Image (cartoon, rainbow, N blue to C red):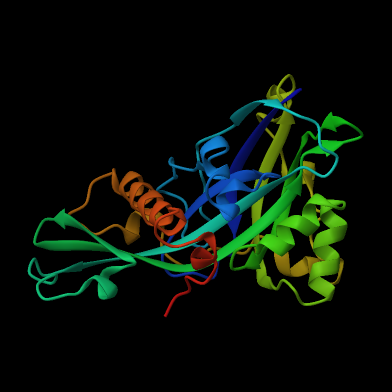
Length: 273
């Protein structure tokens, strides 16, 4: 058994106009993507503590390490990181009047001063990282390229059968997956006994081996040009906005994966209109 700790620190060059939200899980079992009954045994971990002073293009999370105990050694075990764009707008209080369920399936209304606050699910992106190296839990800081959408069950099965970095490269060459140009995620992974070693790190400590070698310069940190996360929050909202967004996202994804409603494949097809 191994104890693994995983942290998501920041996104780089995200091309979205909304709030970034994220969760991660292990594959196998990839329970989030395969739905019930697996989901009850290995729920995804959501990030909930965003640095509101970070920039929209370069969001930072303050959740730190999340601990996972009693992980059985599997040679090709991976962590799957899933990102979402969540847009927000305020409408007059009577906006919902006369709307049918289909027009509200990806929108949740919350009370806000002067109107109703709407959350909408936009674009998605994902990436993956290997957990074990030579039977030991991997320990390091990685910059991982982001891929469009969400991984299909076939992609998840491929990742279970081969070395993560090699499988991703092969899928990319065969155009099964596509890069979000220049966008990436900074993550940490550590053996439970060594996480203190990664409490602080510098740019030189970041492992770039997952980035495409023919386009690595495109993944450099750029000077932020967009707004800060705090500037995206409607004036009448409080500091609880990110918790509301996370709660709403959990609700939407839970409904998409519920066995009596839609299957996991519905989530894969939820794209911004």
